[in-house]
Structure formats: structure tokens, C-alpha cells
Length: 241
Image (cartoon, rainbow, N blue to C red):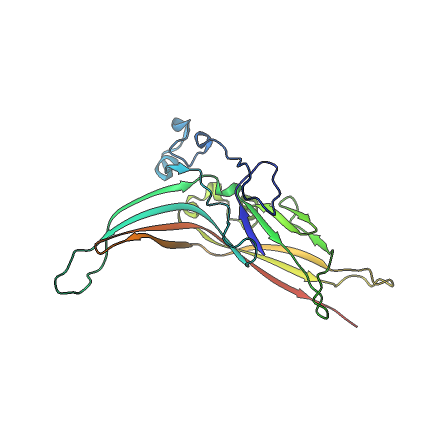
């Protein structure tokens, strides 16, 4: 069960809705047009900047942690399209007349919360505790699951958002895999328990979703969100006598 949350101040990561947000000023972000030290940027960095906005897009309030995926937007495009009226009744194709874009502020600091529930096959009851092996220095592990910042997961997958402007513009797919196993040295008291190991990789170098904001007979406005799509899968091996 996966969900995301905006950076916040001392808030329970399992909730993270209605919390006090903890954003850095836009003037401190090198990829923003509002960056304070503009003259310190290289020519390439200046060309890749866009206006930035603080938004609530980083908190995935829709799935509430009940799905196996989440989405962290990095760039938003607003696309205006027109088509002329036609007396013949046919519908001409939409033509793009304007595109504006801006960056979502600090998606790299978004929290990725993975809630893990393991149930017994025979009874369906949840296993109260198991040994979790989080990514060292990346994930914090709790009885209820794991939590990490998106930037750390991207670093493990060798996709550093800070140095890859194309990733901020185009998005991509990040795969999280939780591997469960009870394979361990034999214990005469049967207290070996269940372990969980986390693996991170990337599978696609572009991802976006498009929504229709408004539409009438001649004009429609689309919003295209580029960003990081996070997919979670579960695998495992259970040994029994």
C-alpha cells in the first residue's frame, strides 16, 4: 500500500494530510526562475529553469494508501486548444494554440510511505511483526511499514533528480519491490520469523497524465502532469516442512 506526502513538520507520515508543510523558499531552488542567485547559474541551467509553485500535488490524497502505486508530479503544462465551428457538422481536429508550464516545488522532498501488511495464509490474520531490512541510509522502517524521501529512492535507482533536468521535465517510472522470506538458519524454538528486503529500480524514462480542465464547442484546456510514477510489487518465498 503506497502513498505520498508533501514535506511537513513533525507529522505522522501515515496521515500527512492537513499537516503544516515544510517547503524551502523558491529563491533557494536552482531550477526555479525565482532563484535568488541567478548570476551563479550556468547558461545551461538558466535555459532549463521554469517558474515554480508550492502546491498540494505532492500529497496523494486520492488513494489513501490502498493501492499499489502513487504519483509525484514534477512539471505541469497547461495546454489551450481550439477548433473552428463547421457548418457541415463534422468535427475538425483540435489545434494547440498555447502551452504554458511550471515546475512543482521540491518534488524530490516528497515522502514515500509504504504500509506493509502480511497475513497468514491459513487464517487471514495479519502477522504482527516481521524483520524489515530497509535500504541503509534511505528508508526508515517501522512495524507498520517503511518511509523514505523520493530523492533518496531516485539516487538508489541512479536517477538523481537534481542533476537530471530531463527527468524533471519528462518524468519516469520507479519500481519498488518488497521481497519477503522466512529463509534463515534453523531455530529449534521456531522463532526465525519473516524478513522483508526492499529493492528499487527504474523501468521507463517518461511518464505523464493528462486531464481535461474545461471544454466547449471551440475551446478546451488540458493539464498535463509530468512526474514520477511509483509502482510497488511484492514477491517472496515461504519454506515449510
